[in-house]
Length: 289
Image 1 (tube, one colour):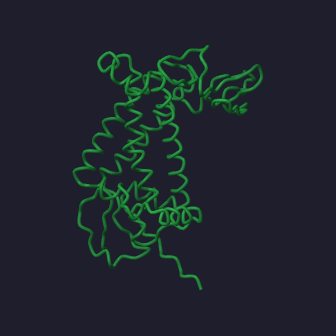
Image 2 (cartoon, one colour):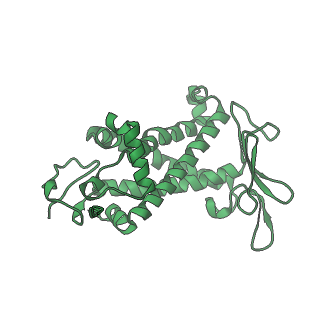
Image 3 (cartoon, one colour):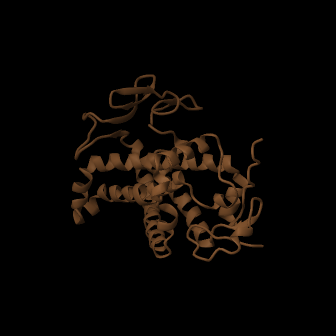
């Protein structure tokens, strides 16, 4: 059986011209698959433990200082009998989901995020911080290793950086329409990232994750003592916290869209390729009459 390689696999592709839709091909190396699943676990734990930390003070500010009597730009809170989410002057009712919910035992829970979305489920700021910081090391070291390997084997340049032609308005608009119509690439084209994938993956790997790590360091008193320039670089401790939260929510949005695309593109084939490394090329669409 002929095989092809993709992404960070530097092997020379073999007999690609003989491959077509329906063929089973090599898609991901073992190292890629391990990094993917380890990173998935790390990000989920950090997101959930981060929500626990946010529950301790569910308000965000810009600048150096922020306290209960200061005006936040973002807040999740509650009144006597309802929950709300406020962004600037916009207030959205969130009763039953965020800020205010009635538990099975009849007690009212006023935490910003519910226990099923946090680590740990019961309120514990200290435990949330321990989980968050422990997995932060895995995230940072894994990202650095990924950068090094991607630059050495040119995976970043070859597969993640869009070419000038990819960024033309006509090309981008066509890809957006194809995605909206669920017209995914078939045959060998399915082994290459499209422009929307390149932009999203590049943004996560080289923008959002580094910003998460940088702003996380800026919020650490120990790091501030050693590298005080971190606070100035992020615009203040509260600005660092706000940027950290925004990046985390954008990564959560990326994960949601990524999982949605996996389901729509064929979850068995997609997940199998990330577990076994083997991927079945989608069959070409029949031409319209």
